[in-house]
Image 1 (cartoon, rainbow over the protein chains, first blue to last red):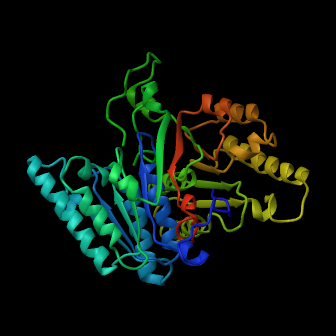
Image 2: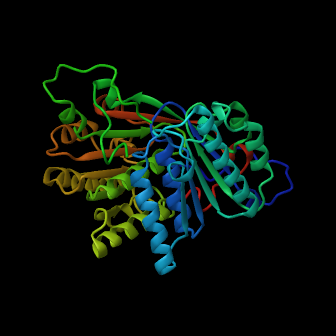
Image 3: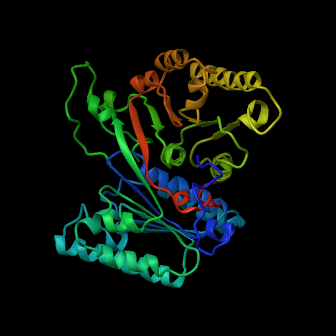
Length: 204
Length: 204
């Protein structure tokens, strides 16, 4: 819940409006829940603004994100049929560039992740979307499959007003240093502590 | 991203499935971003399961949640028209029980919040919804407008398999103690630190 007044006003030569409308790089990291759900919550706001949304799902299991994918695809269909909201494109590692739960070596997985990132880089340069959800994208950087310096460079040089949300644990310090908004989700208490496994409708 | 194995298995007489499917009370608190967006992200998963969703918006400005409300209402309409997903009901303080941005004394606001809570209590007893999003509901408890002991009592005695998500800063310790899943959203970095105010599509 943001307050209306910034702590200070920088001498950056921008008007309040220009400064306010600068595109953001948002990072949701930490060991707690809510990193991806909050990113998809942001996608709802973007859809309502009519923004084109690109989701890139760097995620380890086909079960994850089935709820979000279903809803975002439904919202994309509503847009196509009625013109309400924005168009939605969902890119999934499982379709062309998944790295997990299929036969494959680590080299394959790294190549898949690099291929996904190359697509994002092209889309940023082409201003394909207004909001990018790069779900669980911290991991390919952590594992060295995608070069964090290359990511920061592509983000810093992206044209226009494209917002980018990146989720996942252990966000690289260079990414955190570059990002505009970084939130750490911290676990206070989790049902698994009491022996309860994940359930549908809550975890996926 | 939950792992498959709980840390330990309690001697509670439940099967793994019974324990897994226990209804949850989820709290998103802390001073960082993402508390409400993550709650609405959970609502996407619930919708995809076909669950009836009740949103109770204890929120201070008409501008907040316009994106989420638009999308959830669209999803509710899709359900009504096609049977996909679940039905959605959106309760807003601004329509009958808002406490802010209108003339009124603090006593009015407290009464409005208490009225909203009384409705939730009735809905819990009647099993009206499968997922409740009580957005910014920590504040009425913090300010003493709603009795936290009454909230915990109603949650503890709710029948069936109703999940409840509560968002807002400064969650009461008794609520945290009762909840199953508590995440604290911590601000690492915020654009307002650099003099940037909130913008549409991101903050609402």
